[in-house]
Length: 271
Image 1 (cartoon, rainbow, N blue to C red):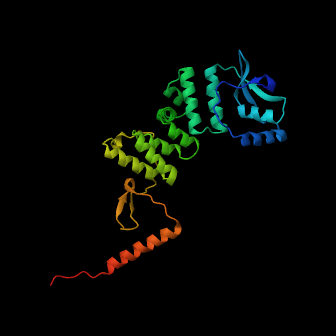
Image 2 (cartoon, rainbow, N blue to C red):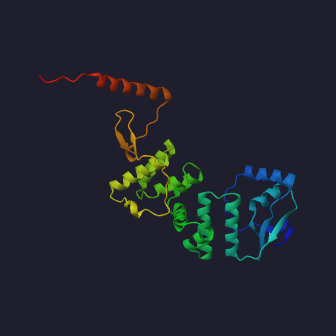
Image 3 (cartoon, rainbow, N blue to C red):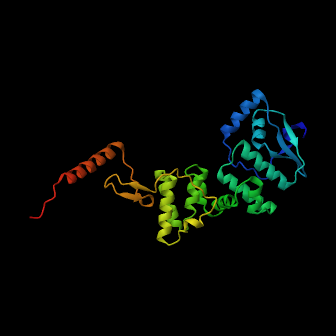
């Protein structure tokens, strides 16, 4: 078992690449307050380099320890090469403070560019599927507007993955706007995307769907009943309109009255 040693904060160096790109200051402050009371409970992982001791895992604890005015922190010095350090770092990060999808994507890219790892290498390392790694890399390399929306939690990664199927940037932007302004559920967005792909003859047969894209529909239908005419409508053709509660009730009552009036009319028989 590796020995825990106390290391001066002044002797530690931050790594060239940090997975958590923008940890909130409030979060670091909370950890700092905990450190003031209990100390650093989990040692930092470090390694020797030509530049001295570099932090492999524990950058946030390091920043919080500085904020708490500590002089030293407990560390475990591991013999790691640069590639091994990045693998340990990513494992540690995913267990402690889960990376958001965009930071995870940049971590994958960093490992590909600096250690010649393929998508399959990365997938095998972290127990992910190769399409999962590929989709994340494509998100930040090809679809910046979607990556920004995922980063800000305006849409989920599942929404982004559906929108990535739309190659027309104008149509993709339009559908993204619907998601941002109306909060479209994933099954509604999928219907819109499928409808668009059908219109340009690009929708692949169901049998050709990627095996990792498994969606749990929980037995829900792909059709809904129109509240006005009571006819079934496919999810891809649903139109969303936003009303305040008062207007919604008035419109609903008007439709109901019109339907009742039509149903009460007695058809005229031919003589």
